[in-house]
Length: 239
Length: 115
Image (cartoon, rainbow over all chains, first blue to last red; front, side, top):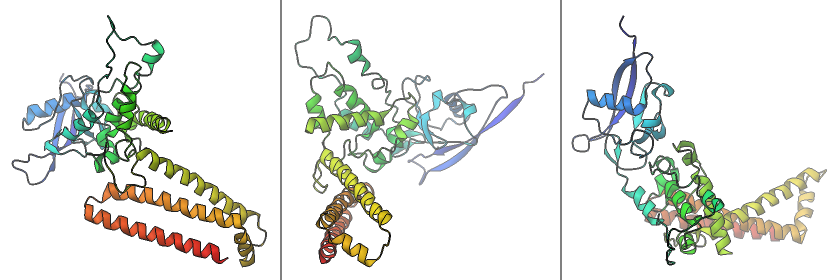
């Protein structure tokens, strides 16, 4: 007996700047076994097998590399950890909002990484290194939980209206989460300098607490809380 | 560090603090006025006139007007820097907002001190 099949409908954003004047949504249909579920990335890979002109990024396919961030039915997320069965059809796929589109679902993340670089996302400690390693107490280490897990998929920053309007000035939730990750690190000795670099009206304070970042983070992190901690630190530092 | 010449204080922490302190003053003033309305049995011209004759009411009203000025400027500046991308147009709007707020404040002084 042949296996029962079902059709899954997609609408995918297509734009090739070399030939297209403006972007358009293209319909696709995928036929899969009725009882089979899969991650959205697997479905996109099958669509690519039908139409190899479709461009998108992916790598680890398990929510670790952060390559396949995209706008799925109006909400940013990772295709590789989104179940097909959880999505309403037709499944609308668009590139991450607010960044220039290179082609189809591939965006130019230059400005995102420029903001990330601004917060100096590395440990600064010019004290002579100990023989083995810089130790932390369990309590000090615990402060970094919920901060270090970010995979830089950009789902948060590209869902943030403040980042859409001022991507060159507002660091954005992803960058600020990392800024706080090093401000809170007991081994880092550049806390004062880090805070001084964030006192202007844009870098941190353009956050209006919309909390889209918290809503979409595929790792369940809370950049708004980290931004709140930065504000408190800035206030304490300035007093 | 992003430079900003037109924000209230040019410093994010101070702007943020001013906006919140002014919001608290406005909230307390609103409750104060609502309390007056609630507790006055006959709310007529005479009642309002006598209420605003008190020096502390005048001063509190001016403090509230000043807070409104501060709060509005931080808010309007934020909105304009979000949505108006042309520097020339944004500066024009900012100047118009400053003039309007300044005039409102002068009018508030004139009204409160005429009582």
